[in-house]
Picture 1 (cartoon, one colour):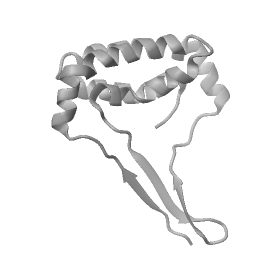
Picture 2 (cartoon, rainbow, N blue to C red; picture 1 turned 90 degrees about the vertical axis):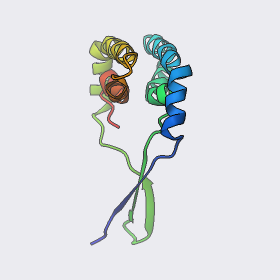
Picture 3 (cartoon, rainbow, N blue to C red; picture 1 turned 120 degrees about the vertical axis):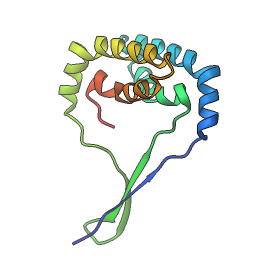
Picture 4 (cartoon, helix red, strand yellow; picture 1 turned 135 degrees about the horizontal axis):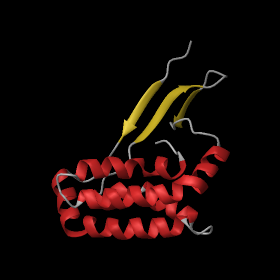
Length: 143
């Protein structure tokens, strides 16, 4: 039986740099990113840009890097392999239907509310959680 090992990595600026970023740039730049992302989502040609921006909202807000996770294991021939780990996703047709019927408008409300909450300073952790879950609200995409 083969064993698997998970390796996670997150690298980025320290908390002080991230706080200064939020005070000077992050709070207003995240509002612009939210507006551009949502506008891009409602256009067919802009969907890739909208998804790309949604996935980077925590970085825009506080320079928070994404956590990358790799799995170390063996393939069928017994060779060691490293693969970037990802979560199991809903089928594309469910995600597409969700986006068309619910995701496009629900993500606008969700991102707008997250942006307003982060302005309270105390609400920044809640806003970050909300921004991290925006891909799920928009298209049932799991991170």
